[in-house]
View (tube, rainbow, N blue to C red):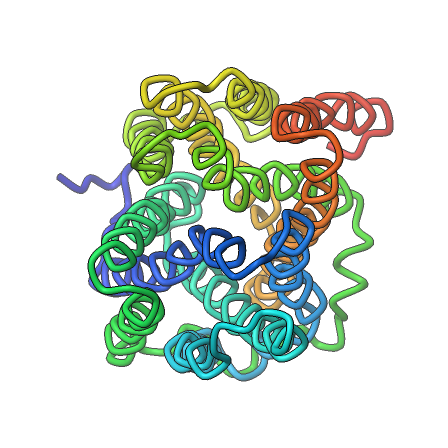
Amino acid sequence: MNTPSQPRLYSAAFVAMAVANFAAAASFGVFFLFPLLIEKHGGTKTDIGLIMGVFALAATLCRPWVAELIDRLGRKHSYTIGSLLMTLLPCGYLALGSDLAATYLLLLALRIVHGVGLALCFTACFTYVADIVPPARLNEGIGMFGISGLVGLAVGPSLAELALDRWGEPAFFFTASGLAAIGLVCHLPLAETLVRGTRAGGVSFFAVLRRPKMVLVSVLAVLFGFGLAAAGNFVAPLAVERRIAFVSLYFLCYSAAAVLVRLVGGRLADRFGERRIVPYALSITGVGLLALTLVNGQFALAAAGLAAGCGHGLLYPALNSWAIRGEPAAVRGKVTGIYTGALDAGNFSGSLMLGLVGEWYGMSVLFIVAGCALLTGLLVLAWGNRNSLC
C-alpha cells in the first residue's frame, strides 16, 4: 500500500520499461553461449576474448555519443534506435556462414554495431527509470528495475541452450532477434520523459566524467565490468572443459540470487548509503568468482553462481544510484552513460585479457585474476576515502 512516506514506485511506465529491459537483456544473454559456437568453428580462447570483447569496446567508445543523444533526442527515442539494432543484427550472424577465418573481420564489424545497439538500450532505459522513480527511493527503484534485466540474463542463455540443442544455430540467432523485438514493441506506447528546455546547457560528457565522484565510481565500475567478463564469457567454456552439463544452471542461480537480494535488501543503500554497501558487494562478488576455480560439478557451479549473483545484486544498483544521486535531469543521460560505459570498458579489457590468461595459464588462473580484480576495488575505495572522493 502506498503511503505519503512511500511515494509510488511501480507505475505503468516503470512496468512497461521493465518488460522491455527484460527482453533486451534476454537477447543479450543469448550470446553468453556464443563462445561455444566460436570454439565449434575453430576459435581459440583468445578469439573468444577478442570477438566477445570488441562488443564491449564498441559499447564503451560510443558512450559519449550515446549519452549526448539520450540527453538531446530523448530516452524513449534513443531506446527505439537501440532496440531496432538489437532486433535486426542477430540475423546478420547467420549471413556470415560457418567459416570463422573467412568472415572474421565481418564478424568483428557486426559485433561492433551490435554493441552500440546494446549501449543505447541499457543507457536509455536506466536513464528513463531514473527520471520516473521517486528520489527518496532511487536505489530501490534502480535495483528493482534491474531485476528485469537479471531475469532476462537468466532466461536468455536457457532459451539459447534449448534452441541450440533442439533446432541448431539458426534458432539460436532467431531467439536473440525475437526477444529484442519484444522489447521494441513493449516500449513504444510510453511517453518521453526528457522535458524540452532541461538540456545540459553546454555541460559536456567529459566535464561530468572529471567530477571526483564520477572518477571513483568509474574506476569501481571498470573493475566490476572486468569481473563480469569472466562470468559472461568464460563460465560456459569452463563447464565444457570440466564436463559439467547444463551450463545455464550457473546463470539461473546467479540471476536468482541477485533478484532475491534486491527483493530483500532493495532499500539498504537508500537507508544506509551506497558507500557503506559497496565494500560488502565487492567482496561477495569477488569471492563468487574465486569459487569458480574449485568448481567440479553442478552443485559447485550453482553455489558459485549464487555467491557472485548476491554480490551483483547489491553492487550494480548501489554504484548506479551513487552516480546519479543529486544530479539534475539534464545530465542524467551522461551520468548513466559514464557508469555503464565504465562497465563496458571493464568488460572489454576483461574479455581480452582474461582470454589471454585462459589461453596461457588455464581457466583456474583466469577466475583468480577476475576475483582479485573485484577485491582490488576495496583498495580503490580506501584511496577514495583518503582523497575525499567519496
